[in-house]
Each structure stands twice: as structure tokens, then as C-alpha cells.
Image 1 (cartoon, chains in turn brown, yellow):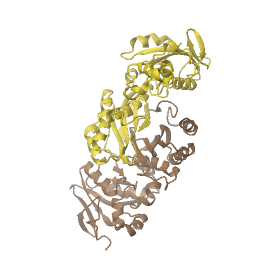
Image 2 (spheres, each protein chain N blue to C red; image 1 turned 60 degrees about the vertical axis):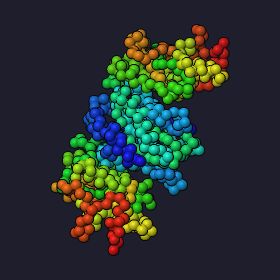
Image 3 (cartoon, rainbow over the protein chains, first blue to last red; image 1 turned 60 degrees about the horizontal axis):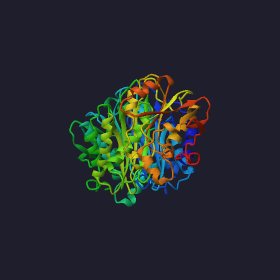
Image 4 (cartoon, rainbow over the protein chains, first blue to last red; image 1 turned 90 degrees about the horizontal axis):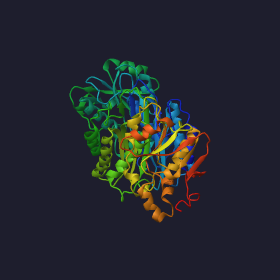
Length: 308
Length: 308
């Protein structure tokens, strides 16, 4: 199976335009570039990040690549290549593996990413897909989580919360934002993608940058699925938007003088301003003009009255 | 557990000398270089590449990195960075994960490789370690499997066969050879590492280069463990040397005029000349002056009389 799969992969992905050497040798070889390389490696596992009974193999393959492209987007990178490491259940057929790659390949083609290497193992246990994605950094440097300054404005892409219903698998990695703004010298101060939750990832960024923030809770964009979940979860839709994981939207930190430009000129991606970073290292949440302490996780207690 | 592990990893590996950004942001960032990058990604799985009952966690971690460094060595690369993707059984303790990384770190330090990123997931199934290793190519280009020319001499490092007894886990990736000869312009024509077997990897190289070869069977260096296996396997030690996998020695292809120099000046790594590539695309094996067809796998039949 592995040999047949490698032959198929060479036919599908063998002719690379970008890599000097792709699938077939011991390693891939990437050409010289005058940019820094941005590299990430995230895996998804059966029963944790997906259930084969609920998601097609194409969508599972797509998700494995998409979470890594989302990381590249959060650095402002132009995505270039991916390497795919598969641990396949022994019961898998060649067609199953092809479906995984077909899902990846469609997303890769959309963003001009090439699959240039990896390996496949069959074993007696569940499916694991580990992907390494690489891209080139903006010429002025990658968008780090440690660069936010007091006064910088906090934007998010899309709507948040309830991702477990479908967004976690079908989200669009926000590479288009990175591609549009990667060379806008210094306008984007910092960026991260929401994998743990808005609350956790925002506070992580604040700590890394040595700043605090104030969020306007009424401005947080809430996904329709957060409202669906709230009907039965005994939590509010806003709580879902703040503490649910796997939204894979971006938290974008913008120099204050540039926020209008970013909001008005960004193409095809909804953006919402939700707050700003502050000199004080406190985490604050404002609602109807009143500030309280922001709770990144387990927001239930202080937000218990949110639906009133 | 994952959070505590990441904190420990940041303490252990956070201060990178090579990477611009290491563990802690969404991606690692690698500095500009005037070399091509060489990238590989191989995984090892419980029950296929190791058995936790037979190998320490340190040795399992070491192997996961070593197989990738072996791939870099086979390209003539200088190894620089690694990203580690772990799928850990839910029963694992923090100390178990630390042991895996401790085994990797000792090998990484030896070859000046930095662990700059990755991710960790706990799940209900067995241990999978997927590592992506990156290095810089020789200035004249990576050592490809497709560059062998008729007349080029075939060398191998170390001794072959019987790796299942210990070599598969404790082998030394041959980075020292790559480091010594990476800038010896054009002397090394091609290279690969023996992961499938001498027979399979040699014929793969011959096909990729469009050449044939003739091997002198009596010159193939046979490991002591191949003789140990041969006592009970009903196969000869030479058969083990040719068809066993996971030796992780290098097959090195050298321009004919340079073979004496390589053999006499290579430091600390045993090298043996075993044959040469030929204009004819036949695969030949010579013994006591008589040529026969070389059988890369299942060498048992034509080699049945080898011990006579």
C-alpha cells in the first residue's frame, strides 16, 4: 500500500514548481530566498480533532493542512510548501489515503501551496496526520505575538464560538489577509490564530507582549453556531465566543493610526474591532461602559448574567 | 499536561541561537541564508518502529530524531533545526514526555541541532512521534539520488544487516560524513541512507539515475548482528546485510578519481567500496569473479548457496 501510495503521490505532486526537489528523494530541497522561513508542525488525531464517523476523509485531510496554514497566516507568511506524515490504520485502503490527500490538495491548490514530501506508515491504531507547513516571512519580519504595544487596536476576523458544530473542520485559513497585508510595513504589529479560544490566545499574546488589554464585550462577533449551542449548553453565546477552541480566526493587532485603513481596505474577510492593548497589564472586559476583570476560560461565573 | 510540557520545553529549548523565533509563537522563524534548505519529515509509531516494552523512552525519542538526521546526512546537509509533533497516550505522565525529549536533546546537542517548535496531543491510542528536520544544503547542491553516473564508485558506511537486534534504535546518523564532505565540490555524486535495505535503496538510486550497477558481494560489510540472526533465521548473514531494513548507514556515490581520497581521508567513519554504477541498466552481483543478477529483496533464492 505504501509503495503504491508513494507512486500515486509522485504522479500527483511530483512536478513541483517551487521546490528544487520534491517527493522521491530522501528530503525535499527548497530554493534560496531572501526571506526568512516560517515553519509550523501540527498534528490531528482520530477521536481528538476529528471523528472518522462524522467527517469525510477529504475533510479530515483538509483540516490537517488548514490548521497549519492558519498558523502561517498568523505570522503574515506566504505559504509555500507542506510535508505530510501519515499514520494510517492497517485497515485503510489505498483509496482512503488518496481521499485524505485529495482534501489537502484542493486547499493547497487554492493557496498555491505544494506538497513536497513526508512519509506514510500503516499501523494497528488510529489515524494521525502530522503536517509541516512552510512559508516566507514578510520582508520586515513575521507577525509575532510579542510585538503588541499599548494603544494598539485588537481586531478579529470572522465570527467566534460554536466551532464544534462545523467551523473547526470547514474553516478557511486566513491566508488571504496575510497575503494582502504582509508587505504593509509595520501596520500589523502582532497576530495569532484562535486555536485554544479568543480568551486564551488573547491573554497569551498580552503576556508575551508585556501589555494588558480592554475588550468591549458587546463588540465580540458571535457566530450563529454559538447561539445554537447556547440553547442547550447552559452557557451564553458570548461565553462560547470567548472560550470555545478551534475557531481558527485571526486576532490581529494594528497600530492605532492604521485601523481605519485595515478595516476599510481588507478584501473579502469580515473584520471587527473588539478592543485595545493597554499600558497597564490588567485584563479588562467592558460592557455598557462598565469595566470588569476579563476571564479567558471558564467565563461562566462572571458572565452568568450576560443574557439578562 | 500539555501546558506544563510546553513550559518545560520553553525552558529547555526556548533560547535558540539559530532560529529568529523558537518555541512559543505560532510558528518558528528561521533566518535568511544563502543556502538551499533541505527538509524531511518522518514518523515512528508504537508497534511498528519501536516497542515501548523493549526500548527506553529516551531511546525512542532519540530514534525519532536520528532517522530524520540520517535523511539530512544523505543530502550532504548541515542539520540546523527540528520540529517535534507528539501524539502521546493519555496515560503518559509529564516525566514520560520529558524523557522522550531528553533522548532527542542529547542527540540534537551532539550535532548542534535546535528543537524550535512542534506540538503535543494526548489521545487514547499509542505513541507517535513525527519529526521535521531541516538543514542547509551544500553550496553546490544537495546530494540527490538521481545524480549517479556510469563509472561512479559505490561506498557504504558501517556494517550492514541484523539491525533489528539493536542498530535500528542506536545507530549514529552519519552527519559527520556530510559535514566533512559537503563542500568537496562535486566529489560526492549521489547519496541515500539505508532505511528499506541496501538492496532496495541501491536499486531505487539506480532507477532514479538511469544507470545499472555491479556489486561485489564479497566486499559487502556484514554486521556482527547479521551473523547472530543467521544462526536461527535460515538466511545467511549476507542476505541479512542486503535485505534487512533500518541500517541507517549511507550509500555514497563517489566520482571514480576521488574514491581513494574519500576512503583515506574520511574521519572516524568506516567506509567500504562495494561496487560501481554502469552504463548498462542491469543490476549485477559478482562473487568470486562470476556475475549473476542482483536480487534486492528476497535474495534467498539465488543466494541459497552463499554459505557453501
